[in-house]
Length: 274
Ligand code: FAD
Image (cartoon, rainbow, N blue to C red; front, side, top):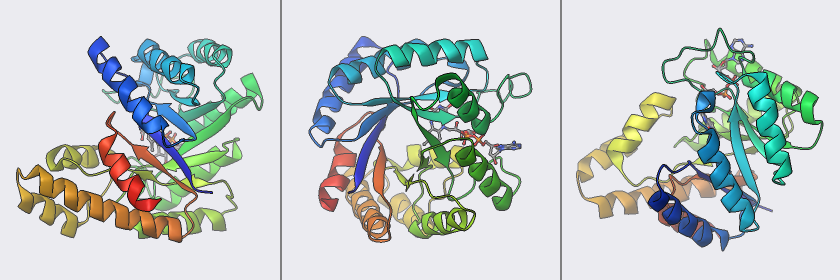
């Protein structure tokens, strides 16, 4: 069975939250396995993430809060884990996180995602299903692809159940990553994270920051469309749908959409796949 999940970020205003709840309802009609909600490293969105997670859970769909360790104390993490347990949450996306300044790593009690996975297992046993992040095109701060693969394997050995990838636009990078970690003994599901294409300049900025490569032929075509949003969206839908087809045919166990709190672009792709 192909799994489906959607990612949101916590809203800042009441109006934004109302819109997001509508998006939640539109997407809920497709029976996703869960909605995940991002977390600002250092706890900057702690209350807002919690509020959205609660609103999803109340709609009767599983919510999976993201939780990052850099800049949060063990005590903060422990109390948040207990709050989530009380709310009936049973899945967490377990991350290191990025503090805006890049500071905080040295002084953090837990410095890497594998340490957070270990901590959650120590504190809560098998209560939570733990997702971790995977980087088919290498994490931007990794010293080498080999090292990054080793660090990924460490997160799995620490007790992760499943992984979600950073987005990419080249299916071969996903297949290569999966082959490499399978050879290293990893057998958990690795779900491709998919970013629908709706706006070129935003996508280019995002991709530079997180180390996701936009292949030249896609970049050039998007640039050529200029401000013609309809063409960008149509081309984006075709490119992303085609890649998702390849991923699923090649054995990817499901799709996790980075929705950016919008339903339309993800649903256009998903409807082409089902
Ligand atoms: P790690 O697995 O700890 O890896 C981070 C880097 O450190 C890698 O380069 C790795 O190779 C290296 N490394 C790991 N272990 C060691 C070690 N023992 N010694 C030396 N180097 C090591 N960020 C947020 O702030 N909030 C979110 O909600 C959020 N959600 C995300 C969801 C997904 C699906 C993905 C893919 C990313 C998300 N991010 C989020 C971004 C993520 O926090 C950043 O990419 C962060 O820089 C790394 O997090 P990680 O969990 O992959 O870290």
